[in-house]
Image: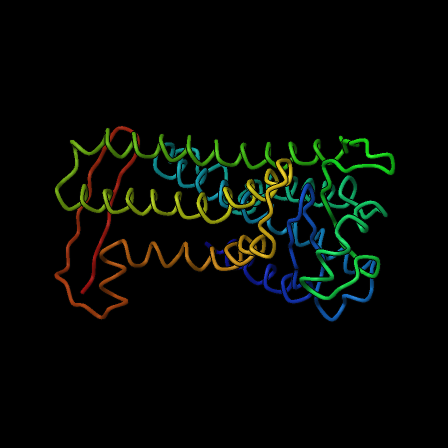
Length: 293
């Protein structure tokens, strides 16, 4: 959760400096900065790429969060490998994938005269901006040339599949770790007291909700934004929704845990409860919890 707190600060700074605008039209997705740095094309384009990298960092941190939760419940003996400074090893892959997102945005999605002309009228009519004056990144899968022949932009397709592949990897990690965590909780349930089993059921329900929320608000919308232009599906300015969701998710993730776990909820709502202490020993780990009035 500390990593999410740090990420939230970083994301907020990037969001303020960038204030990204996303727009889908025809076979193109267009993203540009609308902040006070908007007139500096190189800087604004760089900020848009950093913004994409920060989104990649968000989803990779989420997968890391589920992996760590899996270790804590299913393989607690392995947690010693991440004691102290070794904990930083968990963040190597998120940083690598965030860098890959940056490079995908910066290289294959770079501005071009064709992209600027293709989106010139939609951007002018919707936001009153001129594409030639903007630092942006854009996807343009195909377009008609001067003779009317359809030109396919293969580099943008490769970039699309790269982004979708990374998100698919994160989804796989989340689903596998979530399933293994659930199976472990179920397997040790028979040896637990009623109170301990109830606590673990609350933890599992929290895990399910914490899995579904990012799936529905971040992974799926971003995947659709990348795929829609392939079929010339226009959503216009509604393409900006995922950036809002990414900004509020770290706080929402903690809020879900607070209000779905009874002991946390009672403290927040100032409810008094009886003090209970319970534990259950298994061959793999010891589970314990304490609720104070």
